[in-house]
Image (cartoon, rainbow, N blue to C red; front, side, top):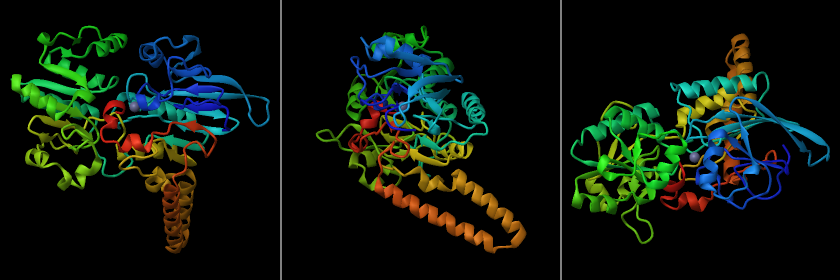
Length: 436
Ligand SMILES: [Zn+2]
């Protein structure tokens, strides 16, 4: 792919067409109601929600892509100046409502951009997505995979959302006399809330704008803005803090539940020692927790699933409910795609690792050499396996060197893709508002 043709989740000038994977803020950074740089392709659900997020946006620029169908787009090759065709398919990313990944084919080859995604092994929608992607790739090869590497680290192991949702219900059911506050984003976690409402047979309070989104998504009877109708409230993440919970407990016994794949710790923000932040550091640096958090930190294993519910504060539970794939799921995804090359779409985070570091051996060329070496091994003994091992190690080392160079995404094939700023990632709690 060449510069000047396609941008995914990136909104600067210079492309002929633009693609949006989903409506979380870190993927729409630079997009506004007055944006008019070219046609914007997205899924049908994203298009439905789009005017709510960007009122006044010129809707004639929106192009809806039906999931699972190839669409042809006529463009001009920036190098030759002649007409060229790009084919694209949107595939359900099962991340938040409307989220899709895009598979592109054109004169540049074949490219897959996942956006944020979660494909659990047991999930039906993920299984449909997997076979859709498998069939769409066919006998072709994916030249480059742009991958959601949010949790691309072996320390990120958490259960399916189905299991995590049951954990949330367990926490709520074990506090029958408490009010419950759940931290959510402006989009996402709907399935969790629906599960709670169905199992516990209760409505769920959401704030007025969130109710409008629920209505746009077709959920009309489950959510309410009347506090008197329920003891379970889904609140914006930015309002979810120790201060808030302590204040609420003066009036009524209340617990907070934070659903997230990231372990949550109490970290001081500038000028605020009491807001909940995020960090993978709770695995490794519990000693850095504030004294208050340490006093209350304890782990309650409500079942035997990996990463159980944790209680970091007298009033706050965290549940490993994630809309991003965990490490093992990312690995399975890379095995499925077998790309020639790959790159993470999250430029930096506390745990950022270039996916090549862990999954370089799964690249097509390395898998082929592995198969080859195994054939030789069967025929010729151990010496060939030793050669293969060496080449794998070299690949890992070069991947590490690449990671350190911190190349900008999009350089490899000239595709402009989203770059989450290091600052936004490092700033404690930034992800609370925008990701997951
Ligand atoms: Zn997202």
